Image (cartoon, rainbow, N blue to C red):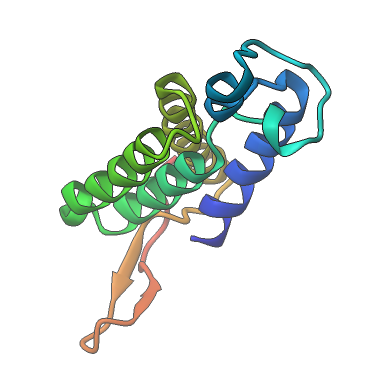
Length: 140
């Protein structure tokens, strides 16, 4: 779960600085719109939405562990992304890009770890609901 938040967040931070998309509030204030690559200021790091990225990463990680609750995890991520657009902190595309990035990175992490013999998704729970490693070999 930690990796499902940390790794997408790091990826989003690197993309934000590289692209430097101007935030909507700057557009509403003085009409500035576009990109300012390699910018470190708060007003030029809108793409992708970091909140949406982290929410989607967490939701995807939790959905891999508890797949029955995927509608709740999806609703959580969509609400976070919508809140970023409604508060005019991000454009819709920024929020959608964050949702995609968070989910993609977590699914890629799960796939790579499974191929390397560490199945971080397959968990078993004891009678008290605590997670434990699943018995048996992981599928190749």
